[in-house]
Image 1: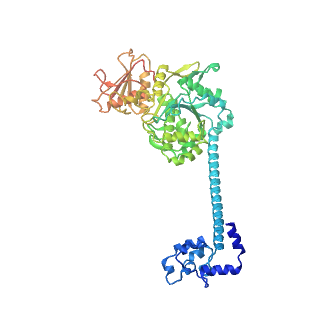
Image 2: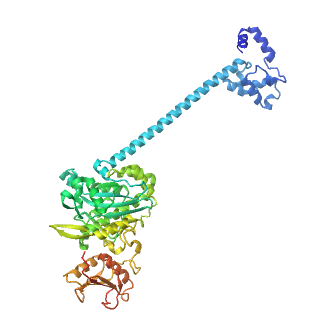
Image 3: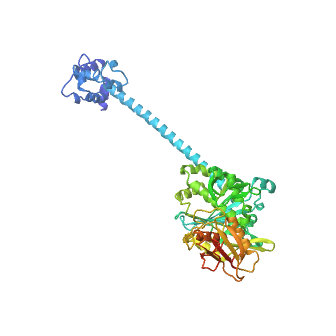
Length: 549
C-alpha cells in the first residue's frame, strides 16, 4: 500500500491525464463497461450514489452522466451544486469527503455533549433547589425542638406499626409574648390530645386530656397536668402523658393559638356541625348558630377556645375539648380531600404554624397512606374519664382509673374509646367526630333507637341530696328538653333509672337515650312498667350513682 502511495505521488501530470483518459474517456465522461461496479479506483462516494441512481436519470444520457446530471445527490454531499461539478470524482474527492464527514461527526458529538451536560446541569440545579426547599420546610417544622424532647420520643418497633403522638395547643400569642416574654415557663397547654395513628388499618383516635387532670410530678408535687409544660417544656409534657396513658409516644406536634388561624385559612376554612348555638363574645369573640357551617380561621380558633359558652351544661372545658377534636378532624378531612399535588405547598404553609419532629417527607408519606381514610367512620374521639374534686383550694379532674384503663385497652386494640354512646356526655351539645364518638360496637342503645334531644321529661330525686333533680333538669332544658323536677317516692334509690312512655310519643325511646347521654349516665332505658307517671315522654329517677354535671 505504501509503495502504491509513493507511485501515485511520483506520477507526472501527463501520466495522470493519460490514466484519466483511459478511465473516463477523452471528453471527461466515464466509459461504461460490464465491470463498472468493480472498478478498483472508483471512489466509495460515487460508487454508492451510482448504485442508487434511478432509471430515469440514465435514460437518454450517457452512463457517465449519472455522476453529474443524473445524480445531484453526489454533488450535494460534496458541498457543491450539481451544475458546479465540471470534473469527475477522484480518489482525492473521496478522501476529502471522509475528512469532511469526520469533522461533521465530531461537531455533532460536540453539540450532543453540550446538550447532555446542559441537561445534567439543569437537573442538578433543580435537585439542589428541591433539596433546599424541603430542608427549608424541615427547618421550620423542627424549629424550637430540643434534644431532650427527641430523646423522650420512642420509635415504634416496626415502621408500619400503629403509633402515638402528642398534640399540644399552647396559650401563647403575640400579646402575651409582649407582656410575659418568650420563655416557655410562662405558658401552659390549653389543649392536650393523645393521638393514636394506625396506618395499616387507616384509623385515627383522638383522646383529650383535661388540662386540670391531677398528676404527681415528683419534686414539683401534685399538679395539674398542663403545668408540666412550664416546668420542663415539651419533653416533660411527653413524659407526663406517657406515664398517664401507659404508652410510648413516638411523635410530637405543637401549635400556638395565634398561628392556628392561618392553618384553617390556608385550607380555605373547615366545615363543622354544631348541635347547639355557641355564643361567647366576651371570651372568644364568637356567636355561631347551630347547624352545619364553614368556619374561617378566627371562628375556628374562637370555637376551640370557648368554654364559657357551655357554662349551663357543667364543666365547659369538656365541651371545648370536644370541639377541638371536631375541628382537628375537619382539618384532616379537608387536607385529605385536597389534590395530593398541592400537599407539598400546603405543608410549606402549615410549617409556619406547627412545630413537630416529623419531617415534610414523613408528613407526605402519612398523608398518602391515609388518603382513602373514611373520615366519617374511622376517626374516633374521646376524653379521659375523670371526676371533679375540690382539693386544697383547687379544682382538679381526678382520673377514674378503672374506666381509664378500659378506655386505653380499647384504644390500643383499635376500637372506639367508648363502648357506649352514653359515656360521652358532651355528644349532642358540643361537636363530635364522625361515628367514632358515638355508639362504638353497640351501634346505639339497647332499643335500637337514635338519640333524640327533645320531648317532655320528668326528673325525680331519689336521694337525700337537695337540689339534685333541679340541677339535672336544668342540664336537660339547656339541651332542648321540656322538663319538670320533683321528688321520688323515697330517698333510698342507689341506681338511676330511666323509663319512657311509647303511648305518649313514638319517639320516646330515642328521647330516653338522649336524656341518658346528656346526663352522662350508662343506663339502658326501659319501657315504663306502669310504676311511674305516663304524662311525660321520659321519666328519670335519680339514684346516688348520679354525681351531677
